[in-house]
Length: 188
Length: 150
Image 1 (cartoon, rainbow over the protein chains, first blue to last red):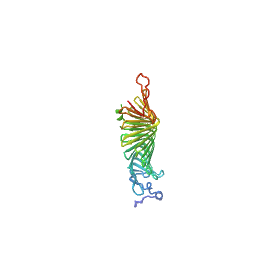
Image 2 (spheres, rainbow over the protein chains, first blue to last red):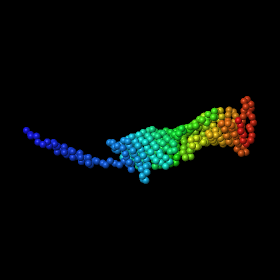
Image 3 (tube, helix red, strand yellow):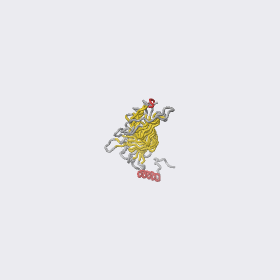
Image 4 (tube, each protein chain N blue to C red):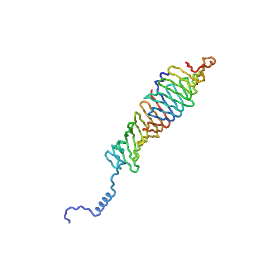
């Protein structure tokens, strides 16, 4: 009969070896989370996945430290392969010489290297002095100040509006082109 | 009808549009149609010059530009419409017809509010106006450098 001795955990050598192996794998594969693109200053609570976050605040800065671009989104994640940040339900702002450009859309993508913003679905852009544009797809190159869209676009100013399919707009030059199927309405 | 037109919006359709915000200018090109009340302008190219929030001037060019308003038809190389003054100026081989009456000259200014038309010929050229009173034969054209008719 065995007398009850001090209870020794019944770790068999095999179990110990397995645990050690797991620890080794963990140590070898651990990667420091990659910083999200150039001087992107992330905020918000981290979730699982590649830096998927909620309640995102994304800010990009110029070399002189001034704010170049600021976006807030319900959700976002950064995809290193694509070199881009994908945002959901976003609002973005870009301070400009002539006045800020404010954008909002259901979906968005910010390219790390160029800062180019692509917006999708329920896109609305507000520009100085009192224009706003509505479309369902827009590409905005903030550094060149160029906006383009292949889709139907409506430019609205007060009660006047212009619409067409296909748009090219230069914010620094203050010019816009609507490429086809143009309609315009000038209120009395 | 003309008074109500001034309170009407201006509607434009075209193939393409170029906006210059700083110059407050919109240039429409290709199959351009401009509507305001019962006034319709068909042109190849239309430039709309804004001033503040108002439309100051519409310059239409074409081969020719065509104007239609109620029973009046007009055409010329260029048409300038100044909504504020309710004035239309047709120039470049300009014609205005109303039923079988016709005015032709180098420049025709048509004042919508007063319902008055001024015709100017090219220097050295005569102005041509043809008026039919109901049932009569054609009256000889009126001479003179500039004529105005009601």
